[in-house]
Structure formats: C-alpha cells, structure tokens
Length: 370
Ligand SMILES: NC(=O)c1ccc[n+]([C@@H]2O[C@H](COP(=O)([O-])OP(=O)(O)OC[C@H]3O[C@@H](n4cnc5c(N)ncnc54)[C@H](OP(=O)(O)O)[C@@H]3O)[C@@H](O)[C@H]2O)c1
Image (spheres, rainbow, N blue to C red):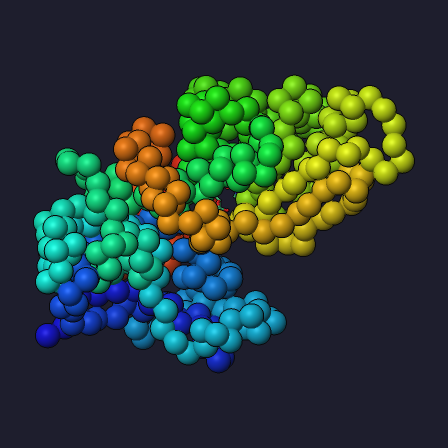
C-alpha cells in the first residue's frame, strides 16, 4: 500500500541535484515511537542547504520525475557523503499524532498536536521518537508550532552563550530575519542590550516598531560611526553573524575595537585588552569571510551551530529552553510566513524562485496535507 509521500533531494555523480516526491507505505510506530501526520514545516535557510545542496536556482529544469539543478563546478567534492542517496528534507515541523507505539510515553501523545526536530518533515507522515516530541499547550495550531526548534532555540542560544562567556550585550546581523525578530523580543523581555544590523532602511522601521533600541543599517554612509556609538553605549563585546561572507565580519570586530578604545582611553600598540568575540552562525553570503585584523589581538571568530550548543548545555537546560519556547510560542517565538506550499509546489519552477529567496518576511511554509 503506497499512501504516504515525502520529498527527497539527491546529489548525483553527474554533478546534479534531483528533487523528487517519493511514495512509501505508511509506517507502524515501534514501542517508543509515534506517527505524525505532518501539517506544517518551514523552509529555513538550512533546509534550502539540504534541498538544493548549493545548486544555483537559475539552472533548474523539469525531469521525468521532478526537477534537476546543476551544481557549481568543484562543489561535488564536499558532498561525497550524500552522493546518489535520496535525502529526506525538512528539519522541523508540527502535526497531529495519528498512531502511537505501546509504551506509556508514546500512548500519552495519541491525538495531540506536537512539534519535532526530526528531519524528513517535508512528508505527509513521519515516525518520531516519543521523547523527541514537544507537546504544545492545549489549543495550539500545528501551523503556529511549525518553527518551534531551529530559530527559537538558536535565538535563545545566543543570549545563553553571551552570558556563559561573560558578555553583557550583543550584536546581531541580518537582524530583521524571523530569528532576528525573536532575538529582539527575547532581549527586550530579558533586559539585554541588542544591536541589530540590517541592510535596508525599511527594516530599521520594522525593528523600531517592535521596540528595538539599537538598529543600524550596513548600507548607509554613517554605518561605521553609528555602530561604534551603539557599541560604546551598550558595551556589546560579542556578535552573531548570519551573513558570514564579505566585509561585515571584519567591520563588526573593528567597531568593537574602536568602541573599546574609546571606553579604555589608554593607548596600547597591541590594541585593547577587551576580548571581542564573533560567531558566524549562517551563510547568507557564501563568499569568503574578510578579516582585516585591525582590532588588536584580543579577539575570536568561530562557527556556531545549534546542535553543538545544545550538547554543550546538556539535556536539563535544553529542556528548560524548549519549555520557554512552548509557553511563548505565539508571542516571543512567533514566526511569519509569506505563503503555504504543498509538497508538489516545492517542485514548481516558479515557486522555487519564490521560496528560495531568504528575504525578510518571505519565508514559505510547506503544508504536506494540502
Ligand atoms: N547556526 C545555526 O544553528 C542556525 C540555526 C538557525 C538559523 N540559522 C541561520 O539564521 C539565519 C536567519 O534565519 P531565518 O530563518 O530567521 O531567516 P529568514 O527569516 O529567511 O530571513 C533571512 C534574512 O537574511 C537577510 N539576508 C539574506 N541574504 C543576505 C545577505 N547576503 N546579506 C545580508 N542579509 C541577508 C534577509 O534580509 P533582506 O530582506 O534584506 O534580504 C532576511 O532578513 C540564517 O542564516 C540561518 O541559516 C543558523
């Protein structure tokens, strides 16, 4: 009986990416598992990474079974681990438990709306371990719970990291993103100074209308001065950069150094002793990261990834963060979507140009039951 569907992405040895909808038998849950009828799963930048594997959307064409895209030259070397293997797509999502295994934990979820970070959520049905389900408050709609994990926990992870590493204020780039708007609300609620860096004037207004204290525009002529002034006033010494490529990383480190020197007063040829930390946590610009090293010797640049952070803080603290997300799902951690797409419309050429943009307030939601 073939009565469930899921979307797969396959990197082929011919340097192409094949997107297909695969049919499979609706599975029966094991003792500790539940079966979700998936209702909603967001298309986040990380999902686009798995779906498109870095292929350029302009190369897309129809194939017999779905779509094909070409990979840029040389990129296949980094993808050998997934060569010719159809990979399920969709990190997280929410739905209704329609079947449950025999364990008490699984049985308790029967009929409930739950969210999960299980992978393979662009599917009509998905088996999930009962212990991995986030049970939502009574009356929560699956659509409101679709983005429960990746962005909310990353935004919370930023303020946690800030505190754990002894900083008291932070800087965030691409700050009008869904995640950025969540971080802004967390910082307002928790009394943390946050400097939001955006690249469009209208996003200054957007964040100001949501109560942001510091918003600077990296495209404006006074960007450097405005950033230094905001850092000097707030005392921010840690930044989270979603852009990664280009000049922004080095600009932020330099501005932290200038602000530290303004506050320190005393000159040292080795630069300020204030440690300046920048975490690159996204790749919105895939180009090389510029580091001009005009910020003394007390600095660090590193990658930051949610699963690594959760492993570091351990299950107890991770669970506390998850519970905060569940309790503030429609306020602090609300996401906005521009449209809902079916599994079939993920394989629509015009639709792909739309959902792959990664623009502010342009996120699409996959609704496999459509
Ligand atoms: N490391 C982790 O564990 C982790 C976890 C979750 C999310 N993330 C990252 O968090 C970021 C935000 O995710 P999201 O789902 O909130 O995004 P989103 O809502 O889709 O918004 C994307 C934002 O990025 C901006 N943007 C796109 N390309 C840009 C560029 N080249 N330079 C500057 N800004 C650019 C857009 O602004 P415009 O409207 O101006 O284009 C928009 O505000 C992503 O990079 C994602 O990969 C990382």
